[in-house]
Image: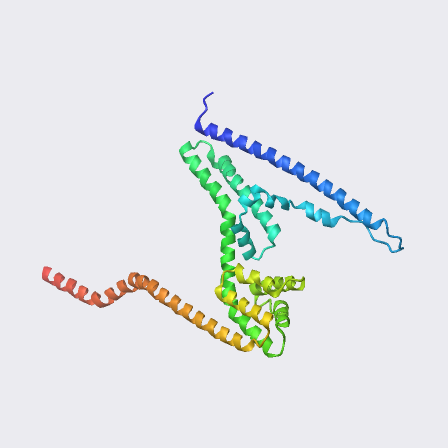
Length: 319
């Protein structure tokens, strides 16, 4: 039996698929053992806490839901060496910028990246690979593997870029609302709480980030530490300056009306300069469009009558 390059590629991919199935089976078996031990430990702990009770209050049905929720999803994969290689710090930062639940989204990202990187080449092999030469199959499989591996990161990058643009758009309204709430006599904490709860529909990104910061603040963290995520996550210098101003006001006290007014004026001036820069770029880009569209029409309108007159005179001479 002659082993052609296509046959060798099929055999190697089949062996790779078998190896992956064996590895997946071992991981599933390990997870089952882990979940059983976790459930046993949870029930033992719950029975230990309920047994000494001598009151007549019915404790209700015994449930190990907290332990089940911890064992249903294998979050420890993310802390392994392979998990940190496949979901790097940059990918975790992108997930946070997208506003997704951190642990669940990281696990979904890990599984999606592995499945796409493996399933796209296998699907191409089944649907298209038969009868193709090795010089064509190998580059296509490599390209599909790269697309499957990098595709989820590209999607997250697009979503994160859109949210960063939204942050830049929401920041002036955020400053104006904060000035308004401070002007009616509310404290800084009250203003931030109201903005997170009542104005989240007009500040979808900053309202979500502010609600997380308020939750951390109520759990005992300092205002500076709770606002650190907003300052550094979306890579916005104006937002970082605003957070620094809020931290200084919270730490040292004082009136915030005048600093917020100065910051608002500076922010509007910065946005005005950005708009002028964009208009200048659009003017340069429109030059090529005008040359390719308006110039031919202008030549036809201006030189058209002269050309027609020349053709008529030549026709008269020929006759």
